[in-house]
Amino acid sequence: MPPSLTGKAAVVTGGSRGIGRAVVRALAGAGAGVVVNWVDDGCAAEAVVNEVVSAGGRAVAVRADVAQEAAVRRLFDEAEAAFGAVDIVVANAAVVVTKPLTDSTEDDFDLVFGTNAKGVFLTLREAGLRLPDGGRIVAVSTVGTRLYLPNTPLYLGSKGAVEQFVRSLSRQLGPRAITVNAVSPGFTETALFPEHDRAWASGLASLGRVGTPAEVAEAVVWLAGPSASWVTGQNIGACGGVG
Image (tube, rainbow, N blue to C red; front, side, top):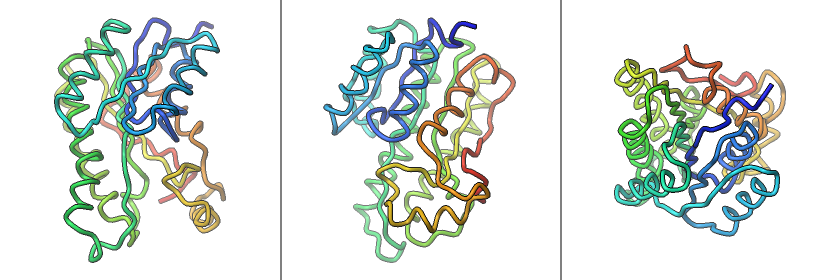
């Protein structure tokens, strides 16, 4: 069977590291050409591009701050210049500030909501304007929005906004057969999740362990592919049974 995304083009925000990097690899492995968006680690972005190209895939790196409207438009312009129409958008870029709410500052709020909420808003809006009928939009949220966690209220609040964007946009774009979904990872082996917390987190999962970025990426690729054509407005937990 040929790869399910052959001939498709994808944009992955925050694609140079962690879950985003795994999504890039998985989309490219399924046959898509991939734009690896990055903002502060060009070496990591070029490394994943080189990895994809060396394996026979197609990828380019584009620097753009998703919290800036003009930068998001340019990201899509460069994606279209590289691959033609963009068929798949994965809104993954995110930052986290680890503080209780009463210790958090206005600057903390602006940083987290600027990237995680405004950045996803701008990315999803541009995707809704540019994707052809039958396109796929996937936003990365977190299983933490279901939990009572004291030290990441800004991060979790911003992801709650993402989940509502997905629900609303799925209704708007449904008549064009564009699906819009979220994937909510559980505790996953990335730089955003300190290693010293992983034993504690493993105890919250039915499967008794934290996940890998590659496992989350598989859920994203499924939603981006033809097999998920009847799935929209949903939040899929790739979380090992947390929550």
